[in-house]
Length: 545
Image (cartoon, rainbow, N blue to C red):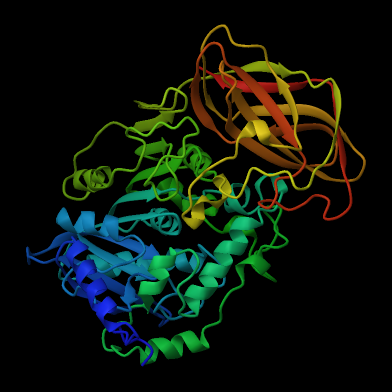
């Protein structure tokens, strides 16, 4: 049958050795694992893994994770039964199990081993399913009635959406590295379509929904993973295989090909793209749960998501770090590595405080300061005042080089579990640059810079890609942050992605302008040439501290 987990290979000795090595290296905690289904109000059955500590300690607080990436993996080698199963986020599951929590991991509707259809992410139905899962978990004999929700990326969004419920069992939510506004922060920043991520992610979710390991998984994992675990009672995967055979698989890349504006539909006759995700859920402003939201200055626009959410809903804790999407490494262009990654102990400590006790603490805002490479914190974000800077381009003309690029390992592709590595900025072509004089004093700022320029085009539309760079006293050139906007000429204002930084005297800021960033963003116009003329200086408002 399709779901057999032992492979008959042409090199059985090597396979046996691999199994032995994997078993020896597996230090995951022992656990009791069951795989039931949970029936929603409309009769749809969602597949879940219930993972409990090995020792039966009675009732426990339970943390819910809702995933789109298979709740746990059926492996091509014998599995380490009686331990936390392998899955897309098992490190946090392992940390919670060791800390004495129960964990329930669910395949969201229409994915993995769950029934139903998945036409788009973060739908109203998906949010309702989250509330139903909280209710189910809270009533199970292993749960003490106190439920939390957590997750990273897609799972972070599903966790945050559960905060829209007033279910009394939901006490605490910790969501990491997600989008608050799906259009501006991922699909079409500034009205310019992001091509790379929707295409790559769309291919991955198609593969998942067909029962295939996707490119999102590392190559070694794709060799080892046979698919998603079937539910209890379907050991041979017959029911799962039939479900995958009849499943209607969404084409994400096609669904968003015309999305440039919040009102544009997600797919043919689909809902407005702006209706998907947290920004469209006013119920979040009335949450009764304690909520912690984490993002990163260089992981897509997840820092903007944290800042926007903190203005729209009560966040007990908000954290903006320097890490890559998974939190394992730093994405800081200055290379600071000390305390620059996600510590899962902090995630566990949050739930210890809010699920195991009712201890209260003051609100916390914690953020990484680029350049200084350190953390700062307080009860609120720092106070700033806008200071106008001038970047003098004179009248300058740019014949757009449509091959201009920040590379493929940029902030917009971190969601595919890759690192952030910008090429040497001194070698980047296709840019207009205007430097400032060297600073005579350190510069500190926090928030989103804003650039205003007068531009003329030789056609109806263009894309303006703006990059704020730091030129060090030693001549090094570092990309700090960036912004993009679809423009039609005239006086244009573009907000760059938010950042906190402390830059030393002797360095100088530099503004760079391009008309393309390939292959990440769509070409504007789609064919032909484009000339952009910057008429005089650009005004740059920097939120200084």
